[in-house]
Image 1 (spheres, rainbow, N blue to C red):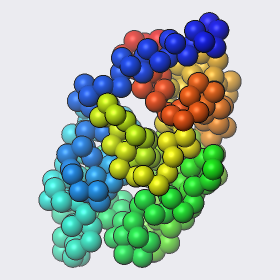
Image 2: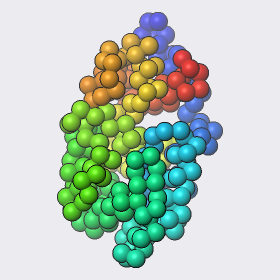
Image 3: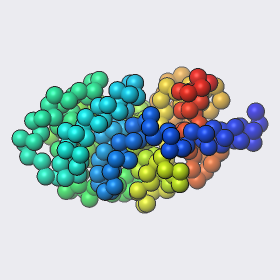
Image 4: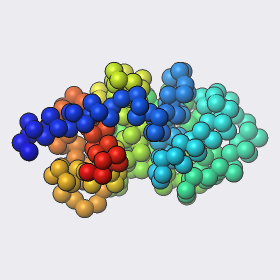
Length: 254
């Protein structure tokens, strides 16, 4: 396909999959449960954190997370007692367990009390072309209070070679101005043009078949390759093509 034909093909796939029906099968439904800004971003961050594995199980465990937080994530984060945290100990999703969950709540409280919240951290550290430096700084801040060593693996660092798929997905949810209602777009101080595509097995495989990625690993370098091509297709909203690549991979076995 020519560049024009490829863009037309992928734009059509975006239109096919970037619809409210997408929400029903995706963890993005978790932040959609809330209306308060802080509830949305905390629910989104926690849901994105455990978004690996089979999607029905991810969604089931995300809903359990919200129940444990009494379906008021921001209030629980900011006002919890040590006794309140005890009920989180039995939570488990793959390798993310109650110890990790408990620390995440403590770290989020620190972020809202000492760093003016999640949006502020990412907004302060974004560059004019990338959010990857902001993700690196976010991880440093997230673990600046005493923490279990095991928990650090649950927040990726692109400066250490990670594609940071789950944080990039969270940032897509928070930043992308989606008039069709899937992405929430509640953060207004970051341009969607600097977002990176959540790179996973599906978007990676489709990206390689389309010639966007040459690397075999789904790492930070592969993400840069993918982002570079997607920005050529739409410099203002490159990650809209996540819907096309993911849809082609998951629903069409492209």
